[in-house]
Amino acid sequence: MKKTQSNATYNKPENPDIMETRYDLQILQSLRKIIRSIDIHSSRLRNEYDITAPQLITLLSIRNERPMTLAQLSHEVQLSPSTMVGIIDRLETKGLVERIRSQIDRRQTHIHITKEGKEFILKAPSPLQEQLATSLKGLSELEQSTISLSLQRVVSLMQAQDIDASPILQTGSIHKKSS
Image 1 (spheres, rainbow, N blue to C red):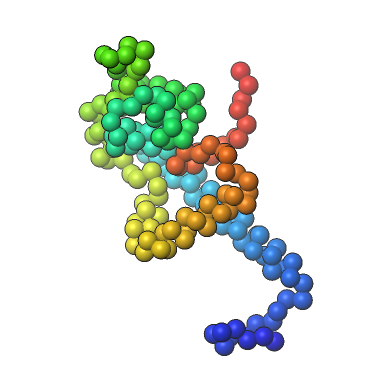
Image 2: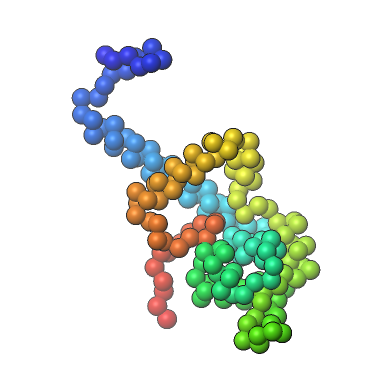
């Protein structure tokens, strides 16, 4: 038996791979819970507010910034331009944004939030689960940084750094459907 600094005793596993496997499974289980939680929150957004998380993030980005071009917006929310076109189309259909052609360069179109879009934002929930957003605010900057760095490390370990990701995950198939 080996003693730790806290004077608690534990049995050192004879096979060190057992401990690794347990951590692998714990990490996988935690990731699955996070993904499931995002699924549930995304369903709630769709069912109660008739908006998807990427649409809400896009709307918030337009509100927080100035009117933006499609390319600027695509870069801001880390989604492909083709995906952004569909999101803007749906937000425009709902009357939450409008496209306005630039007076300076007629080739450019800027996306503006409408009055209805601003009102919608006031009643919409956080795109991040409220409990998580509130809990994160209660943590020290060091704790928040540690969590962020740990998650970034997991992304790196999964070799997923180059995968495009919206600030809010959208679940579903990772394969594009062919036309």
